[in-house]
Image (cartoon, rainbow, N blue to C red; front, side, top):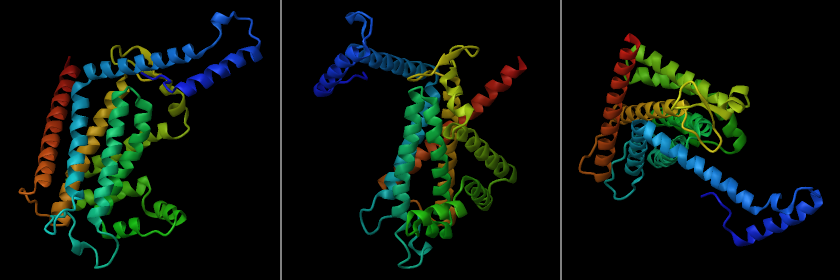
Length: 324
């Protein structure tokens, strides 16, 4: 429950409200003046709507939420495998020969830390979406999609990795971002990477369009646009597609489903591509005797396979509904 529990803070607020009521010189009787109990009521209202949104979304979107959870756990498993620094015989996905001796930090250490950030950000999008907070989840998702793209680029391109870690101050880092790591340039870099890893031409084109359109859409909510700042106050209800519902403190909305589906798409794309990078670019040989790497590949295969089944079934359902 969202409520002020600190006794000293409650006391100070009560004193403030007591004297404020005299300064305002309200004609309302004392029993109707704004008081600490009213703030407590606001907290109870927020808590009630928050719990209701979570309950409704778990009932309406159990698969989408579960798959997103599996995706986050697959990211976590990969982070644990890469980040594990125990033993001289540790199997690293990025070979030491990839960088010249003495050139920058160990890329596995950098990438292991980056995977921690990706896992937390993906978990944050999932948590906000499950709470019915679609607008904040889209804002964070915009950042996450950039992080996914950047992680794929620096793990596959030696020059990009060197540029990423080689900066002296914030101004140089901002300049580097404008020159090489803007969303548009990342998308073009991933398009080249998709081709280089052998994806079909049509798939490469569709993936580039999907990344661009998704980023453009989520940017509406990150910037001060009318669509991003005003429209999200009301959302389409999951229970009644023709009705709008106030979104304050969370709501089970149609947009949440779209956010979860796209989150799953992005995690599947990232995991599929990063493992291809390990195998094809870094010639990584998976050691199934290593507990952490075994868990990482199992989680990846379970998640990607199950999400593919979900997408196939969803496509069949949509085709059948159009026929009717």
